[in-house]
Image (cartoon, rainbow, N blue to C red; front, side, top):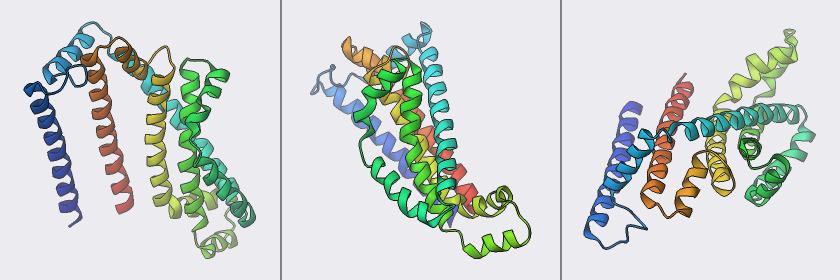
Length: 251
């Protein structure tokens, strides 16, 4: 039943993409919309081929993916560590969980100029920005997962001489992992979007910078070539992460 449901979901998703592509083709061929707003698909494809032929495609992608990986790794380490330390005490959980949730409700984009001020317009500011934004869902979900572990399991582990690390490794983490995994997934895509958004707002390199540059130069075909690539990348990554999440939950 689950496999049938997943297959049906994939069919609907593919159908949605096909309908979107068909609508794009239909709208641009009728001439009812300006090519500056939405260029024809063949022009976008040609622009993408030009980027590939001139070697202008992969260097920005490598920089952006490296930045995302660094931001996400920092978000995971800090998010899980802070959550673990907070949940060692019910008092600390009651104090800091609302604080972390409250800060997360503030649009961190407001503080993006501060990241630029401290780290410059290079990849370092996007790493810090993406890591900060990705930290919150990871920390909050980890706090929720660890706090929900039955206290009897912890007492049983301690009564058998398990150390704090062994208790975390063999009891806390496995029991809380489904909830933590959701936070990791959300944190990844927030880091992904934050890095790209940061590159678009202020950067010298990266995919986001190329999107902003194409818009500044009024090159809609090139602009949409980069946007389509980002959308397809996000879809592929979401599919991979969803498959991993489903398998881990089934396990």
